[in-house]
Every structure is written in C-alpha cells, then in structure tokens.
Length: 304
Image (tube, rainbow, N blue to C red; front, top):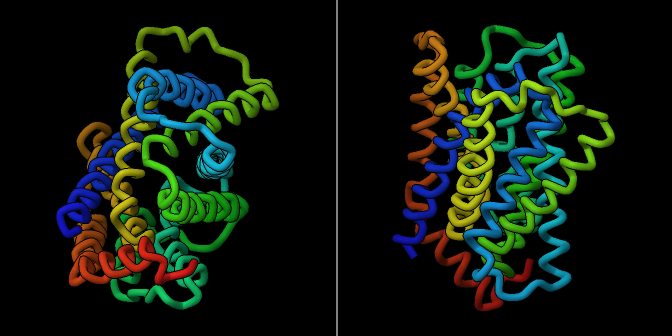
C-alpha cells in the first residue's frame, strides 16, 4: 500500500507539472484562438488519443459508467469555462483567479468531511500553509471580491466536486475507463458550447504556429495529465490529492519565469516554500491512515 501511495503522489505531481506548463501554452494560444474553439480542439484530440491507446482496456460500457463519465465531463468543462471566463472581467486579475481557483485545497477537505459524516479528519495545518502559500504566490496586494472573482469561485467549486467525484467513482471503475468517458463527454459539451457561443473557426487556427499548442493541450495536458490524476487519486485521500494538485500554481509560476520572463521575488519564493511545506506535512504519517481507511472501505466496514 505504501508503494502505491508513493506512486500516486508522483503521478499527481507529474500531472501538475504538465498543467503548469499548459498555463503558458494556453495564454499564448488564446491570443489566436477563441476559448471555446480551443476547448473543442483539446478535447477532440484527447478523445482520438484515448480511443487509439485505451480501446482494449475498456472492458464493458454500462449505464453507470456512462453516467459517471457524463458527470465528470460536465464538472470538468464547466469548471474550466468559469476559470477562463473569469479572466474576461476587468475587476479581477490572473493572480486572483489562480488563487480563488486553488481554494479547492480548503473546499475538498471540508466537503470530504461532510460526505464521510465526520469520519474523515480535517488536517488544518497543511491546508492553512497551502492557502497562505497560494496567497503569496498569486496575489499582488489586491484584495476584495468583484464579479470576476465570484465567477472564479464558481469554477473553484466545480473543481472541488470534480476531485471528490473522482474519489467516489474511482472505487467502481478503472482510471482509464473513467478518464476516457470523462473526456468524451467534455468534448461533447465543448462542441455544444462552441455552437451556442457561435465561435467561428478563425483562419489563424490553421497557422503552423498553433500546431504545438493544440497538440500539447490535447495529448499531454488532457490525455496524459488526467490519466495521471485519475491513477494517482486511486491511492490517496481526496484532501491529500487537493494539496498535491494545488502545486500546479507553483509549476505554472516556474514555467512563467523560465519561458515568459516573469520575475521571481521573495514573496513568490516564500509562497513556493510554504506550498512545499504543506505538501510534506500532508503526507507525514498519513500512509497508515489512508491504507486502513481504504482497506475498511473495500471490506465494507465503512458505509459512505
């Protein structure tokens, strides 16, 4: 069990590295392609990749799997729509949107505690360190809630329920099955959203410079990123996974420094240190607790 948990942590951290670089890719791509069209491309390419790679692993498609895939796909699509849509408001900043989105690091333990009827304990210190670290990492002394911040908060709640839904559904289906049908349904919702918004295909989308962003988002960020998340969450509690996933903000900042010339000051460095401290504390003496809880659940001793 301990080896599986260690592998789960590595898998989620690898996913956050992929997604951290995706922030740079998306920022550049949105100057050329409308958001809804970018969503269509990334999900459609990911579906093609998954069918090509994992068609033999999907043993049986039933109503339950279709339902769970639809729920996950809808949560994912809506969350990403609100997250990106928040950036269109003048009363917020990219840093604030990043911070508010990552508040799932608090929301996941809270809702997990409610769902388990108090059987899962909330570890306050790692969550507190993660929140303060995110605050230092993403905000530039701008406080207050505007309309854009409220939109971002809705997106954050969507990501929260997405993480929790993976934890619940992952007990009944494999990571590959859930991830494949999640992305399939997300692609359907993306096509519908693109049609509703009336987003035309700009001529610039066929520019050779767009080939790398579209392929990176479809193959790495969506296909392999979500596969790593699903595999990792199978061996970790959702509240622990949320802290690991919040490291996406750290890697996004690192990639921004490396590829876009962003300055790394003491405030952001302190934020990174606090985030890593939260990560270490969240995993400390946690293996036995996770193993015991999962073993009891599999044996029917814990009734969710």
